[in-house]
Image (cartoon, rainbow, N blue to C red; front, side):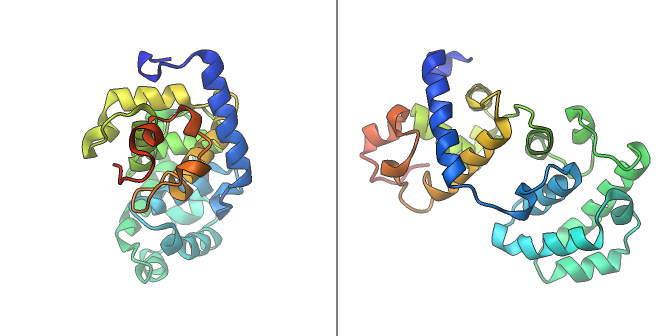
Length: 229
């Protein structure tokens, strides 16, 4: 555990338990959260990149129905995928999806690799996407570092958050230390839901409803009423 967290193991375990309990009661049941299928999860993470969830749900379900596995997507007609995704504003992912599926089909025999380095070698797969697939498909204790989870860490530890914080080693180490090694999938879903429902960016955070409030510096330093990174 990095020194930055400044939490005892007992406190850390209590914090994790509090977030897991909250997450169980506030779980957002998106279709890609209902399956451990790595293909379905990878497809969702690719489509979610820089896209609002509401914008891509219908497209995701249609795409998964039309192309239920990697060989089917690898052999797909580009025009058919274009028709499916264009109206949803997801057209820039078409070439990416086809290239990724074709590489998976030829290099990995139509399977999603479990190794992170192999995932990162695929077109369009970032550090975040690779970590998300490993966590949500295989319950691996991966830290998910994006603007939302970085915001939570920044508020929790009273660290200033910048655009570059996603690439900051201290933030990554803190998030990695925070992940529950026994239930990483449930923990990371809870962390993402907390960022959306409570620890918000464009609206005032709901500090009085936050399961992390007992350990968080943000309410004590701001009263929970000021805008935060």
